[in-house]
Image 1 (tube, one colour):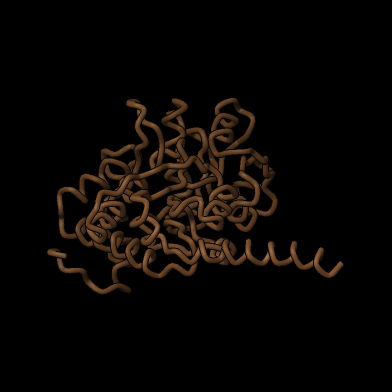
Image 2 (image 1 turned 120 degrees about the vertical axis):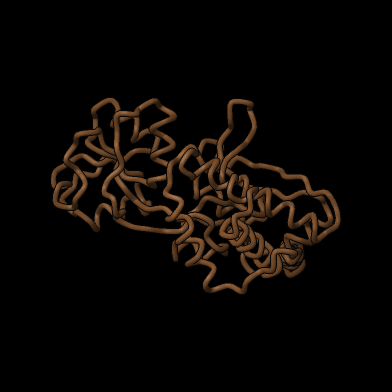
Length: 296
């Protein structure tokens, strides 16, 4: 009886020890060994990460990820291949990071709950919760939302922001922001609450131009960052260093960095964000970081 219990228990302990040992490898060590950086990404998240007309994965977040890949190549002195795993929802991304199935996942808002399980990089974009409404609609202020049908994705910062702004709004649950925009187009709701940059991209995707984003000042603001495995300071350092260096290059007028931002969230980009807002956010972020000399 004692032996029958001991063998399974020992096997379990060895398995557990093996799992811990495999997780002891840092992301940089793993990339050095395999030559592969594995990224979890939403493939339909304009303008952050999406499949373009050429069938290529593109977007602002993917541009940031490619900068991180290039920094890894410099550090390791070898070519790094980017492997993309589809992970559209946050409920997919965090478990994949915990299981070390992916090394990195971007275009994500920081929350204290998520921070219990993963680490977050410096934010490389700032956005906020706003409403997409038909042009001419009077919605916008908190008072105007009383009794109005507002599409929200449940258990998100969007839902929390609207509940806080106006508890008497009628929240209509939708599975995704795109479903909410389509419901608005069909007249089933009065507005859609969500990330203003994503909403701007979605209304273009579904050809719903006769709309506007309100209010001017979002119900809630938050940064957009990358999630990484916890307890991996070397990789977190490299990711943060890459993002901060990119921001400094943009503020210094570097053409490559400026073109990268303007392509996605500039005056002529997919989503029109005031360049001064971008500069203000980058400057605010860099205040808390050491300046990186251009030659580095």
